[in-house]
Each structure stands twice: as structure tokens, then as C-alpha cells.
Length: 455
Image 1: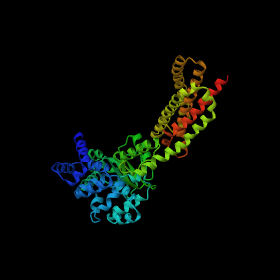
Image 2: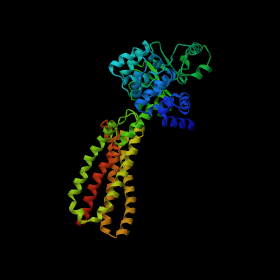
Image 3: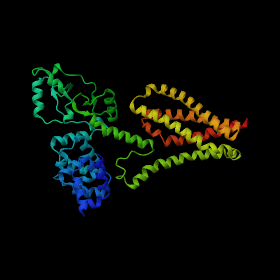
Image 4: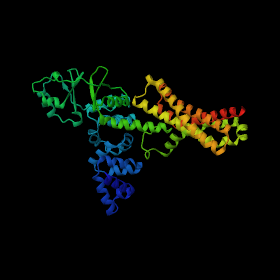
């Protein structure tokens, strides 16, 4: 793997020369590229700009290009598709899983969709069109429909004979699903069940009940959570009438989990989830994605300036308190982000839900008191022994206690409120929470200090 990474890095550095093969060294690198796994070549193309992607793709041998094409994100596939001769598209589409094809066709205009669906076989075209009517995040969009099923009145001998005659992907043989003559899901049998029982045994005697049955319209993230909960390697997908449509394996969920994790990271950083890789996203799009949040938070942050202006006389008269603004605000923001992250993660995994909301909030309330007391003790010792101002130290420590408590409670509560409003709780994390706690922290600090000094 290390050697492959070194080759890819070398090729990427000399990509122009490698494509033109203008030297013996670049010719050797090109030959090395041709012997790389299609997934590695796709990873390389992902890092290139559109022009170099197109040139490299056109230069690849057709058979290799078809394999690389399957490994690329749908957005890049859509850009490269016009480079493929229309008579060659069946070759590219033939080996592509239906869920991958559906993602690609989602990226096409209506005109191109009509054009390229004609290149599909009739059965494949009908199935793709049916998938396009499903929500892109539904279970139906990632299921494997190229699955063999057995009928419950089959004997083991007949079942094995059928399996021997058909080319079946090995990952679909862990569990073989059983239906009745109408296609309704009945259960499943394991491959070993067919081996250890007598040939004349009917499948009805060895059928297992499905631990989990997935509806075609279920959300992919919910499916991943349920399959992980039950420890399943695969699960059947059915329609509303319990007609078997396909299966989802744990391998199908890897990409879903990666996408969901990436989305959460983007949202927690105040970014719009990217549909393309960093290098495939235009400069203008990056500015727009990041600028929206920054401008909004800048306007929201102006509330801090308004609060400080209201206490301008107090802050100018007591310079001592200005020394601790950043310390208190930063501590409050950090404490709030910790709580928000824990709750967001708990909501994502299902460990935390609406049912235990008050339990979580009460637990966080107790934690906030404990953490506040610890931080206050350290802060009191530091400020009092350095400055010797007892009244000022009490004011700062009281503010810190209230700020940390408020931050933890707000950080815990906001994800619940967002989820109740059908908004992704990940939006509540930094920088939104940090900005909110800056405002609340300054308000608490100014109010508490001014009141204590009045006594």
C-alpha cells in the first residue's frame, strides 16, 4: 500500500508529463499507472482539475476506463460521460451496480437522461427508472437487486442445482432469501443449511425468520443504525406489500456511513455539505459555502458589541475586568461544545433520544455544577494570589460559574430542540454555539460584575 501511495504521488506530481509520455521516465510512470487498481486511478483523478481528468480518462484503455469510471463519484462520472462514445456506453453501464447508475443518472439533465437510458438493457432500464423515483437517501437507492431468491416449496436438491447454474456474487450468498410464488418475502436460509441437510428436505423446514426487514423508502442512516444494532451482515428490502426487492449488505453501508460522517463534520464547522471533492468544487462555490455562515455569524456577533457599549462606562472605569474576557468566553465556548458534541453523537447513534431527554439534561446539569466548581477553584487561586483583589476575584469566579453552567445546559439543549424541529442537530455545534456563547458570556460577565461592585 505504501508503494502504491508513492507511485500515485509521483504520478500526480508529474501528471502533465505522464499523460504526454514525453520522456522515458514519464513513459515508465504511465505503464505503472496502467497496472494500478482502478480505485487507485480513480483516487488520482479525483485530485485533478477537470481538464486533466478528461485528458487522462480519454487516454486510458477502454476496458480499464470502464472499471475506473465505476469507482468515480457520480458528479465526476456525469462530467466524463460525454467523452464516451454513445455506442460504448453499454460496456460502461453493464458492470455498474444499479444503485451507482441511479446516482449517476440523478446528475444528468432530462435530455441526457433520456439519451443514456436508451443504452441500457430493457430490464436494467426499467429498474433504474423505478429507482430514480425513490428518495436519494432511501434504502432502495443502495440495495442490491441482482439477488437470487428461492421459493419456499423448493427442495434442497433443486435449490443447489439452481445456484450452481447461475453466476451469483459471493457477498449475496451469506443469506439466501426465500419467497412464495407471488414474490412475498418468507424468510431466509444460510448456505450451510443447504449443505448439512438431506437433498429431499423442503426449504419450509429450514427457513429462518428475518431479524430485520427494511422498507424500500426507509432512510439509509436509519438502516445503517438498525443493522449495526442487530449485528447483521445483510438485510432484505421489501415494498409496502412485503414483495422482496433486493438486499443491503454491510459493504453497501460503508459509503453511506462515510457520507453521513462527512456531512456532520461539515455542519459542525458551519459549512454546507459538499457534493463534490475539494478540488472539484469551484473557487466561487467555496467562497459561497463558507461566506454564508461567516457573514451570518458576524452579524450575530455584533450583539456582543452592543452589550459592551451598554456597559462602556463600567468597563472603562474597571480595567481589571477586561483582563479576563477571553478566558471566560473561551472556557464557556469549550464547555458548551463538549456537551453539544456528546449529545449530537448520542442522537446519531440512537443512544440518546426524545425518551431520555430529561435524563440527559439533568445529568448535564449535575456535570455543569461539578465542572464549574472545579474551574472556579482554580481561577480563584490564580486571580486572587496574582492580583490580591478579593471583590474582583469573586466577581470573575461567579461569572465563570454561571457562564460554564449556561454553556453546558445550552449546548445540551439545542441539539434536542433542533431535532424536534426536524433540523440536523449537527448545526448546533461550533461555530454557531461558540458565537451564541460569546454573546451570552459577555452579557453574564458584564451583568454579574457590575452588580457585585454595586454592593
